Length: 522
Picture 1 (cartoon, rainbow, N blue to C red):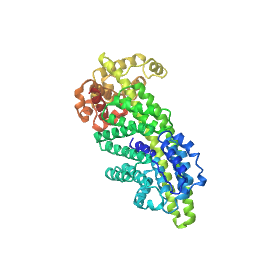
Picture 2: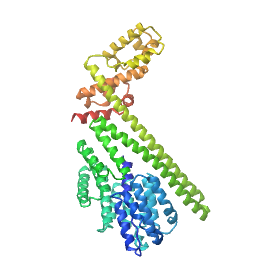
Picture 3: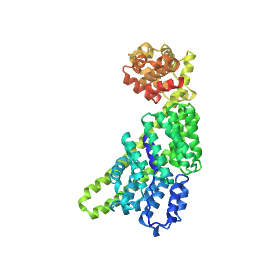
Picture 4: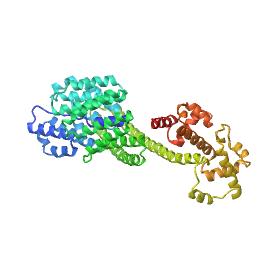
């Protein structure tokens, strides 16, 4: 979640570079195009088509390219954003004091979560920020540089330095429309710093201040939606899930017909968590499915973007090799690191999402099975889940080791064993259970495998976990016990073994399960 938040804060940032010798009409079009990024990115493309870049100074050409790049980022099309930047970056990165191209490259690295590369460039830009005015760059470029460096410091959790950079950014601003947008973005960064430090009251105050300011500029729907999403997160932390859901739905409504795909992805993620907390299974499944679909789409796009960025670096490094053979080893190393980090990020994102989906599905399955478990307990029947028609049909296809009569006798004794809760005996083994049921381990193991559809260890462990989960849900006193006591109560030999089995059965840890039940009882 933390990395996703920074990805989006990077997207809302932009840079405006102009020359004092530029055509006033061109400057107006660029200002309008930049502001349109926060109204509807598609409009930026149409506005920029009216500018003949071949007749404009180099800084204007660069500004056109960066606005186009930012428009694609808003739409979640990172691959096209990188494509748009390639010519500009290749052309200007070797020039002295290339603030614009370095800044653009740092933003591209940040958008793809290659934070180390972005941090290195942004810190270097901050160190050279005093030279900006003498290079015919606009004054607010310094504001953007400090803002970018602040976001990178936040990734490193250096909150104090990040706030100092935000203050530096604000000190560079004047009363223009563009600077107003920068100031709102800085407040969004500040809000996240407060949330990360658990200063919820301060965060809520900032969100309300941003909302009041944006009421005077309702056209900036992206900023309004983003602020509402942050409001939703604050209410989620306050456990006001109904209010949080209202905030998020308002945010979705604002950008319903706008091409802000990546922001929508963030909101779907937050909505799914709210509906899970509210136990609204249908809406949770709906928004989680949409979120997962959007995640897969964006991840594929990021892979393409990383490949394009690697291509960009290959082209750049090739030029450096031609000019300085002595740097060959360093150039190859840089390309290798970018490739490695890119591939590693793709793998980590993929594994993380698969694990998250698997864990949530386990929680849903366990919740469903618990209803049957509780019903059977109330009816004073067996504590295991019922055998369905399908299970009986499947069993009949397997060759039994003993007669049907003997199988039914073992099953009846197993049910009695479960009713008497003998599975809570820590020393209970397959051999001990076979002795108590007056059979042998081979026959008992076969019956458990075929009728319970699991081996002996899983059978006993699931009985124990279901039992403890039942006690936690029906007797609030157990919510105050230590996990070590619950492990001993369930018949486990250690706290760690209990925690491992509990998570494998339910999809969450014992502490998380207890926390959920505690919140639901409030």
